[in-house]
Length: 239
Image (cartoon, rainbow, N blue to C red; front, side, top):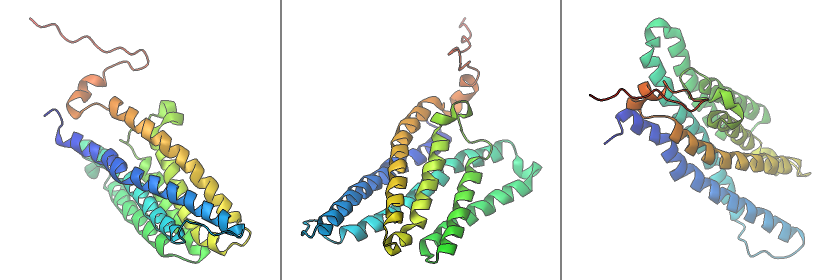
């Protein structure tokens, strides 16, 4: 087997994205469309064949999707982050930084859990901001594959953005049901349409990065290559 334990850990993030996040995304998008169709049909005074429960199911699965997106984002950055701490022995050289990162994980997850429970607008804003800040700060730590030279096509940066969009969409849900003018509903639709485009991009850039990131035992050879010129050192001649 050519995969080491470290390489298997790298596959956990894309595996969960494929097995959990994208199926949830498909169900949420379908139910969103059905919910809107039902609303339009009933607004005209007609009787829709779409069951009323579709709206509640859309809301429930949408909350699950947000939790899954934040979870898979944190999971994706954890392995390289821990690997960087261990490899560079940061625990010995800068223990405060390691402790700060650990506390930031706890604060980010706790803020997201509290966001799911919060109802007042102020607290929803506070917990959404805290969880979003935690995701951004953790994702920008050293050791995480960023692709800074092509930030516009970076899997990491677009992943951060789609995660923030999902957190924002979750935070405004109660406002959608209280707003008679449907302003927040329109904002919700626009935000999630943009997020959907980024999800498509995530599927493409994630596949590309899996091809570009070498296996652990290949790193010492691959990273000697000249990427801009697509050249690698010639292997030593045998005999």
